[in-house]
Length: 460
Ligand SMILES: NC(=O)c1ccc[n+]([C@@H]2O[C@H](COP(=O)([O-])OP(=O)(O)OC[C@H]3O[C@@H](n4cnc5c(N)ncnc54)[C@H](O)[C@@H]3O)[C@@H](O)[C@H]2O)c1
Image (cartoon, rainbow, N blue to C red; front, side, top):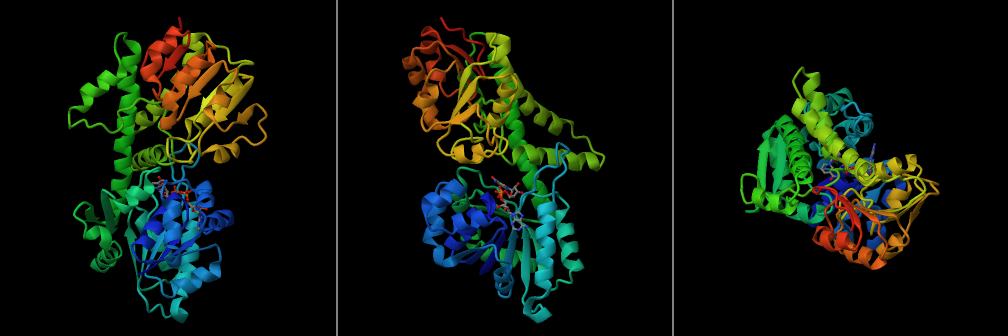
């Protein structure tokens, strides 16, 4: 099949790479010229400097005969002549802190698409085409997509909702072997085209292929993200709080007790300073906004959002409260800039808030290290002289007063050893419990520790 992806971000690029790998002819359109240049470079490092997803570079290079990238409108217009399916993979961020989805990218792309589609086959529009909402959108968005197409006189088309459930950092593996594919359509014809497109998954015994209507599909995506987000918030704000408040309780032991119950499960039961990223927060806010706009109660959704926000504020505030720390003039090492391991995505990364917080308190300087997210992070604080970036953990630790672990990169598990070797009695703030196996020797070596899920550990 011939497939157009509008938006070559995490979702568009990963989905397109897997579609090409399934044998389809794929066209990726994005307005970001730099991104198109890097993604079409045929060089793995260049691709990964743009979107760091394990396997994406290899898949794009391996399938290069079936993938074209462009920011040229004319090329898209001519591809639409033979196109079977268009996936809209556009950003849907929150407007300020209102909860409402910012649909301007979406409208801009679909309005233009409507104009192009109406001109197909010299205006005859003889070829049937399916327009798919792949972005996470409000539940009634499918009606809006339909209205925009009608407004532009588009004919011979179907609208489908096919939300993306990929997990950043594991997007390619997850897209090649998804746990589920959800297709929401109104017409059998559209289901049939999507089954054809996803034949690889439809025929698989391990993938749950779920057909629903478009509103159920869109709502299912928002609700799935909320349930996961809520689970994280329960872990931070209830389990973690218990472990921080009562002595002689180790978070890992509570975790073990809880996860043996299959009804509870293990996912999300890791303590952390924050659940960041581009999805959970904005999708919970959007869900709340949609419920409240419709006159419904959204207290639990709102409280989940607040618990996450509170977690980060409490974590960073503990330095002053429990260790009587004055940030003024001191040197801080910050480990991890991406919002979680295995990605260079820094959207809603806790490190952004941490840097802002300690800069406000006139920190002396911050030395930051991340294996892949440094370049993205630099753009958030252009020209900030107090923020320096280094290329390894040892350089970051030199002469610091405080070390903060903000991302769960597996390599940070060995930071405890490096801190002991540095022989300086610093304050360690472990926002991921990465060094929990070392808390005892660290405190014996004079290191004070503030860790999520532990009471304050004073260095001896
Ligand atoms: N990132 C994830 O893990 C994930 C997972 C599931 C669902 N989603 C949802 O998928 C959607 C896209 O997310 P993403 O992470 O890929 O976003 P992204 O910001 O990485 O990518 C979006 C891309 O769209 C491009 N774009 C914006 N306006 C355009 C236009 N008019 N025409 C063409 N391209 C345009 C941008 O330049 C950008 O490259 C969002 O709704 C998000 O909530 C994301």
